[in-house]
Image 1 (cartoon, rainbow, N blue to C red):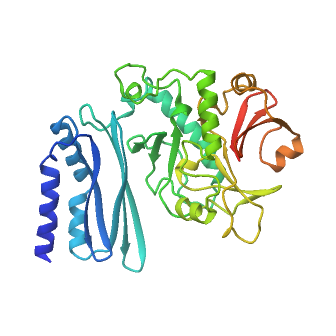
Image 2 (tube, rainbow, N blue to C red):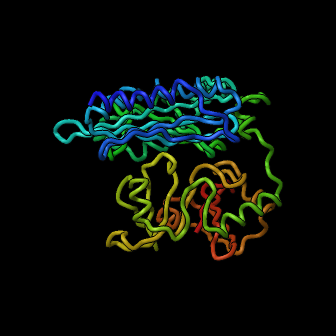
Length: 379
């Protein structure tokens, strides 16, 4: 066992102590060690223009992720699965390190470590490098999280404190920022540690306006699309049956979706179908629609997606007006009026739904009685 441990630690030291050789482009590489059915896998960067920044980030991932102790446990025959989900662009590197281990008595323990770095200097990102007023941004995000997450919580949940937001534990990707809670503060019904995700568009007006800052480098301050660009982008997405911020496509098996993203609770029935709510933080306030079969969903497929937050190429839930999208998309092919009773059945507000057809699919834009967009639906 000592030889195995020495070999694993030698690999670790070679990876974390010496920068990778230069590559044409920056990328994330997996470093892994396996003993039987147990694995430790963690990310390391290669190909960054600055070898010192690259080494700084790689070393901190190893240190902050407790990789050395995981390798020791692996070599000693411990039961664990350690992996990661990572994102890299021209401005940041972000990773969520996950560890699941089996304890005596068949009890399983899970832990997460969220790390996000600026590629300019290798420093861990803090909110003051993202928002012009971090306190205001945190206040808005906590309010949004309280409003949506609390709807699915019950008094029987032991850990259900949405505030304070875990501001020192967040990840970023192409579409948004996710804050990861300690399990003893907030956990889902499945037992997984809680998390809350915000699409970047939800936080418009809060970003640091510095033209050299992280938000600018990531394109979060980009000018709005023209009406023609907006219509073209929307038409392409609807025709493909796929919204750009979700890893789903119409027609996909509901069994596969549920296995990957976990159901919050039994699907809600509405006239002609069912709403599926997923536990994964990306799906906060996003309803997946399938058929109305009551005998399980083994043979059901995804028939629609409702965004009740976020945006679609500039159409923003809670902000955009009906007059604005009609100016961009033209007159709808069909208008559905939701009465109070219909709105209750569909868990929406009374108002009008404009239906636009692109290819074999439809885009439905729901406006409340004030003409404000409350829901975007692909079906």
